[in-house]
Length: 101
Image 1 (cartoon, rainbow, N blue to C red):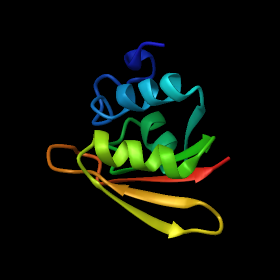
Image 2: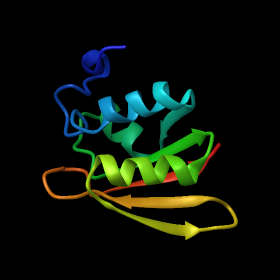
Image 3: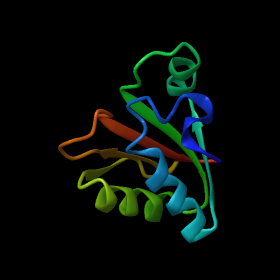
């Protein structure tokens, strides 16, 4: 699916969504954007953080994202498998929260 189909290509998510899509294909997992980012996209607002649900291994997904985005991974809740990736320099998105579906 082209990233500009929903206005993503022109938003500040353009540098983040394609690598997440590659992660999904590479590891054969489903990844869903949820929360405020969906609302903000629909209202044509800037997105400052991203919430993802992963149908797969959250730990591996967050580790891959921290490497891909030159960021830092933080485990917010080990028991419920909720991780945060603080993105490195050059991204308009500050962080990505990842939870298991």
